[in-house]
Image: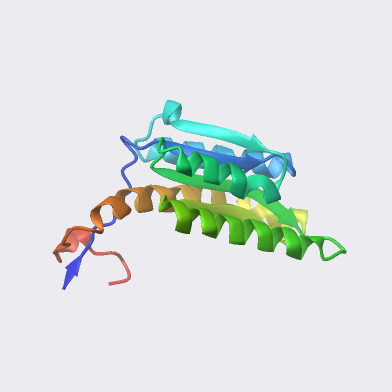
Length: 169
């Protein structure tokens, strides 16, 4: 068996981040987790470029422009959609999820989905640095890993060794 190695080195990567301004407190905490993690993985703070958008529904458009620019190795999307008493929640969640997926498919740039879809503000806070960790951090790890993996997928993988195996193997 041959395996492509997991690589969480952000040293030379450039990260585009799209953040929804709506529910700003949550978004700011997600962004903090994103930037801190990128730097912990060896990335430079100056290589994180942030685009604030009005709300979650606008995330895919900004993500597409950033991904199409050719300037970024990966895109991270951050925000939160909190359940209300109307179907609006479902429409926004569907739109942002489908839109982000289409950006990734159409541009072939890794796009990490860090938009929380939660029932209430407490769940959002738990996932933005609270008891459930920081999803901004989690999706940044995914973005860095995918930014390193995608360029090598067209090449033959290395022989399987303990150093390139994941915990699940």
